[in-house]
Length: 291
Ligand SMILES: [Zn+2]
Ligand SMILES: [Zn+2]
Image (cartoon, rainbow, N blue to C red):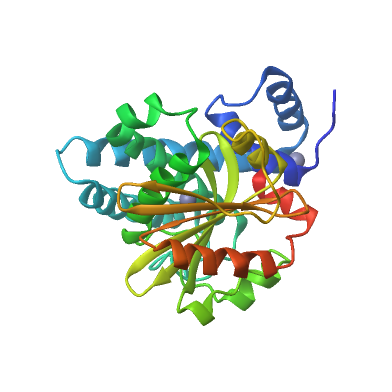
């Protein structure tokens, strides 16, 4: 059986808890947990929080509200529950009031990760018909849906790294984030994200009040894109319109894929894509972000 580091195991715990891992990985994690008290402790915290979140989401879902209102209701309840849990476990409380402040302890990070995941699951019910019908659809349409979805979460103030400065994040993730400031587009937030079951790093920007999504994907993302594109030329921009949203995709010579989505004109997408191509490719170790 393959041995994984505690770091890797920690990244798998959410999926383990939700029974989303394949049998071999499940066994690897289970075996590690039996022999590692620190990872076992992490799992216990995650289990506790996950069940709190499920209750919170269930309560918020019982009322027939709009997506944004539901997100806010879930957010409020979850904040209450997190504050409660933190008080119970006697963790430092300086980050409790606002989860927008820099997050210091790893388990709080996980709370928010699993929170985002749970909210995504809860909200999927809203989109369930359209989402599942096209769960294996064209990646660009997936990006448009995902953009709407994550923007709704963002509007409810529960973004993963809201309020973090870009410099700080660059250090934390040991990478450079694409600069779009010259286009009047400001970096706002980032989180790992799934588009049609494909992992991306979702960078969110703001153009005035409008959200702009930039997704960064590795080889598996490119494979997904190839499913609907017979030939992909590096650095060529592929465009798609979905409702009022414009989506663009551009692959790099290093076999990574950028997706752009937002209420944008084709000209703006072009400008953003050429800026993205100027961004030095993220280092391979960034793959860690993709679980
Ligand atoms: Zn461990
Ligand atoms: Zn996202």
